Amino acid sequence: MTTDAGFMQRAIDNGATVRTRTSPNPWVGAVVVTPDGEVFDGATEPPGGRHAEIGALDAAGDRARGATLYSTLEPCVHTGRTAPCADAIVAAGVARVVYAIDDPDPQVSGRARAVLETGGVAVTGGVLAVEAAAQLAPYLTHRTTGRPYVVLKLAATLDGRIAAPDGTSRWITGADARADVHRLRAESDAILVGAGTVRADDPSLTVRDADGDDPVRIVLGSAPPDARVRPCREMSGDLGDVLDELARDGIVQLMVEGGASVAAAFHHAGLVDRYVVYLAPALMGGDDGVAIFAGAGASTMADVWGGRLASVAQLGGDVRIDVLRPEVDR
Image 1: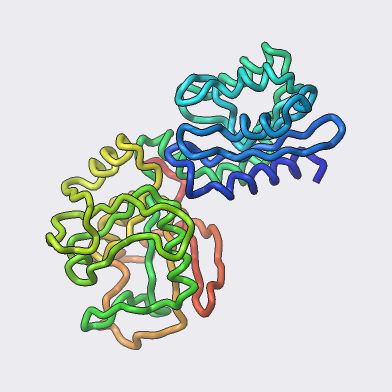
Image 2: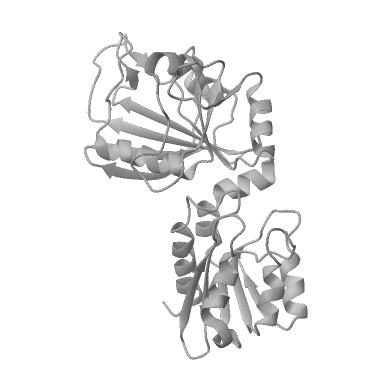
């Protein structure tokens, strides 16, 4: 635990504790380690609050002089709602900064090293970069593409059906999987469904079984006046334009929880960054149930879409499978 990697893992763990509270700011974790081995933790506070580095420095106080500071993201060098972290690090007398990944925000990108080194601070970058980038993927995507990180959530039987022929779909998965969906909602700034789903299921799309705020609720099309999803934002048009508008409004992560038509539209347009599929140990047993995606699929195996498996986890009697889109430009 006394290695750079060990302390950076602790910083990553600190960042995980505030995942649902910091957006649109990144959920950064930090650690200050004094010359005699004392350890102080920090994590980004809600917008307007302290950045992770400042939280750790405040916890350390005068003991930060000569210490090493670990951060999952390059410290900021610009004044926003708070003062620059890099300047505070220099003023605190920190001897060394270790961070995981560069901040792609053009106001920061690569500039922290120069500020810190000019102030006499040694800098090491790239420690546990892969792990930190995975944790901060939505923020990185938002800053590099100008669009939200899109998570498509699907719940299906083993034979790939999301509803019975009569349209019923509750409940395919069990209580543990449904609670996990609420955690995913809490991590998302907005949740999107189609008007057809609103009319058929009348969902509320709120966070009830997890710690976090309700996401902004977005309906593609028009929601009935008495729909439980209200108040909601009704949008239409090209999906790329929809994402551009949401990103400008500070939506860092968008969860798509629509039906087969909306899911297919996002998938075929190549707009999904992460597929979260909940599979129940159940079989519809025929080809007349509602498939995960509406419409025609690949006509030959050469055209079958292939992603990257990120994780597999058992949730009660169900399985959650996370798949990332291929690393290609949008």
